[in-house]
Image (spheres, one colour):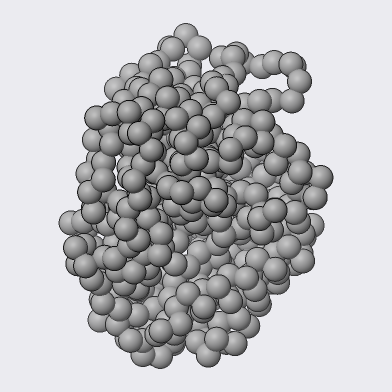
Length: 538
């Protein structure tokens, strides 16, 4: 089992992604000096006093009940900027009253039913990687709240004939992948949170991995699923396809713990790839690069991994690299030979059998060249692959230095893609300026389809010491409003959680919201399941 991540930040406690002196100087030159942010010790973290649980819940939890200080702190937040700020400052305004780590699906059901009868809120907890307030321990109208940690539900059963696997929701990404690789198989699902996110979390949030074009988003991989709700067990058939009404599987996938607890996920798997090949290319600008990706997607030549950075992300990535000067010199020399300056970095990758990889690579390369995109070779692709999960570690470092850093994502059709890109980027820059903290805003495309693609924004600015949450709220709201005004989705793969719930009427309409409320009222009549998430306040 993977070791717990840092209680105050992201990932392996022994790992740090330290910025070099040149990178720090670049940040200060562009953003101004920031006031370093100190972290308290674990024992110094304050939170509301735990409330006593009803006897029925305690009995159902039995030996799986945890009430220690660290147990509560670790399940009190996810990894959004407000979550990290509150944890690091040692002032948690909410925390679960206890943690339950059920040993079986039957125990999950018993705890959920006892909690519903006793009026105790239940917050399902996987890897704790939510960046949208998805695991905030909100009680709602209830007297107490528990975090239901699924770490003990870790089974893996493979059907080699059907190429499917039954996975426990508590398996973290590397654990699930290791179990499948031992059978010569792969799930191929690698979101940036891969190292700590869980199978249950992938399903509950409709996750999308970095190789989604090749393997599919997680919702496309799920073939059957089981949910323990206050109303009882809900499970779908393990079958390739059914025409039996609206897909209940689709109602569970993406339900974010608001209907019940996911206890079993059956997924489609593939043979483990014999070859992986990643390359770097560079487009003249973001618009022409996006057009090249559209051509790939609509011609059926899209690589398994396709990531296009805009000009600012390309520039900042090089500036923050420990070998930025050398990389920039080599890149500029290469581009001058091709009468090109600057541009947008593109990472593309193919996985599979050697012959198939080479065939698809040749087709993709032909399309890219015809769109004016220049190949840089394998080194940038290998560098990306090596550091593909390091972004959250860099975020911790920036927080230590006193910078406000956050991400958000959306998507739109190709016909409105550039409109959305411009509107959200402008909203972020204007909002940061309005807070008195002008910052850097950059973006990349990381998931493409025939009809559209995603946009993933990152923004960094000096924090407003003493007003960090207000700063975050103003900038986040401005960006969300720009997304809604442009007709984009409020989330492409981070889910809705608490932070995006107010925008659900714009996403699905008032009738859609009421339909979701009706479903919740049937499966969770007492309203105990993950209060405050997905649905806007009534």
